[in-house]
Length: 137
Image (cartoon, rainbow, N blue to C red; front, side, top):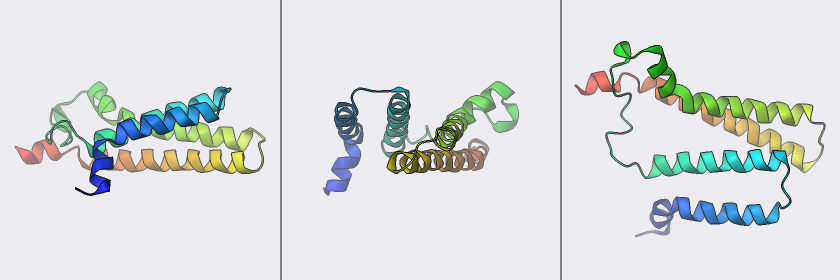
């Protein structure tokens, strides 16, 4: 068993330990640090769910065929990706409008653009998987 497969199985634990170390280093926290820690936690949970799915059937697509789903069900299926795009856009806007300079500005800007890109990729991935329930029947 390689180190990467062991790390993949314990990704949440390693990520939580890293988050606790970050929390200790960033103390006292302001609003921006709090948002960054929240986004780190959401991203960590999403990666853990991606690497360690509960069942292979869980990621095949929506439970109902796409045409039978209501607007609320469709929104619920796409909502995690939409939230990543919105939070990335907010983080990018905060970096651009905040007036910060130097390393924190570039770090926040890169983080916001990265989160926006991840959300857009996840939205595209979920959009292309929406017909998987029909094709598997």
